[in-house]
Image (cartoon, rainbow, N blue to C red; front, side, top):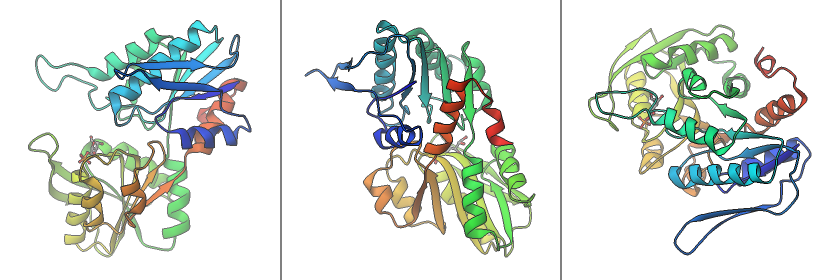
Length: 311
Ligand code: R5P
């Protein structure tokens, strides 16, 4: 088995390799003068079971292209099996046609990864579970919930908890976390988004008064959804609001928005490499999912159960 990384999240790739007690495969991903991407693998991978780690986060198109070219290099070097480890799957939010004459870009990206030569895909908290069906190759979708639940138990276990979904679409994810927290009660923020990139909180379904609210979502991008939801919960009398979000996309002014928000704390994972601004914010904490991904890789390589990781 070999673990290779492109440039998108080297610290995570190193931590995964560390968990598996393997060195990272010696490879370089470089740019020509005109920004073309060039990948070179400096060791033999013929007949190997190779896992290539590359979240397709910002800059999403460059990181996607690195992944595709990395897979192509591995295929042409006769790797036996190539697994695209994409902890954050960019373009996942474009998983259906929101209107006429619009693309389904998540499906296009799935096609590109498959055509490049991937035999399997491993991702974490896909925006929608059905994205697995966009691939005609085996796809494992891991959940960060066990890592989050352990942190919540350790930090907020004594509080009167309420798990909150920031929108109706996230209820299944929120319910699954609530189950792991001794069946904590569930509330829902009924949100209406008037324009893309903007969100507006309408009302809270559930009594959050004096509760330590745990907001859960897959992505924080502009931060609008989360910060508005946190304010709405505090307005309804919540004791505190902490957010657990798998993928800290944190575009534009999101870190400043979080820092100035009603949130007590934002907890994200290292599926995306955090910016310095996020690390320095004082309100953002990062949990590692390297052992979770490392263990899933070990099980895929051993051909043992991955789903039992979540029992
Ligand atoms: C939406 O369906 C996702 O689950 C997130 O709620 C959304 O992407 C967050 O975006 P933003 O932080 O820009 O409000």
